[in-house]
Image (cartoon, rainbow, N blue to C red; front, side, top):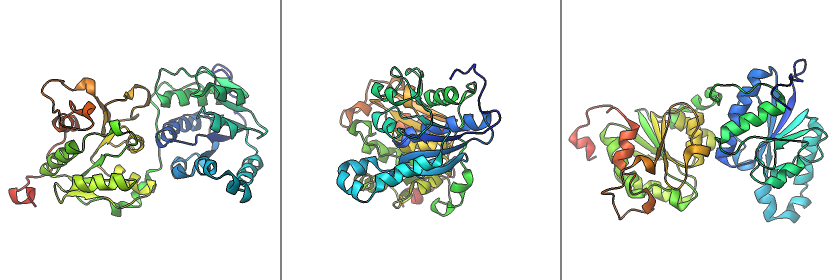
Length: 357
């Protein structure tokens, strides 16, 4: 459907099924497209199929009526058990009973496209030259073009605009999450101004050196800030505990749900994040953040939104850098460079006794 074609939804607001199952960053990058659609088509509603581990997130957008968890990762591990307990058949019955006007597969993978089969309505997705897995386009009623050499948020916004027949907005995409959800659990936030260091990621060489985190934490506490360290697994918790050894004002958070992490992030003065899902969550919450990129580039999947700063190796001088840090790729991106990028004002005059407490 062309953007020049009048919208067929002028007299009826459609009921749309979104298929965007993972990962955390990909799910977050889909949210601005919903904001665009809601502005263009009043009354539009969305259901959303998403991996169960990320099922909290779609409901944070006011236009999502129902979140339908899917368990592809778990089902793959035990197909017999999945068939025996009828999880798959129950999932399919839910989708068929809803009678959607159309489906948008915003993932562009074979596994996501397969979920759209047999629902009795048109399915829109990326064409073979735009999808991450070109074969996925064969499952769609209407494969659409969204050029790859642009940010993921803009690709999804284009997909939704073409599928639903409204002009693509010219302004920057907005997440517009329901802030009241995060404000209701303020007890997790420190009373004093604080920073959040998002230090965990899946790739080894995307980790900023642990010694650098420790040095940055020292600079932050010396300037009067509390530092909060979230974690998602045992390795990340152990790293957080080692970073926290530098000062009692560096706090290792308890195990938190995504909503609870979002609450802590939303109250932060600023966030420092490696290239990972929680960095994208901070961006969606419009919290000022500095995101650190070593082996990856922010051009296509960087933190998107207001008050986001990307720090890459191209921003760092290559001379006189440490040689004893791991991963070595991040050696030029020293704690002083990151601290300068944060551009924070000291909160209070910190006594010598407090500095060493």
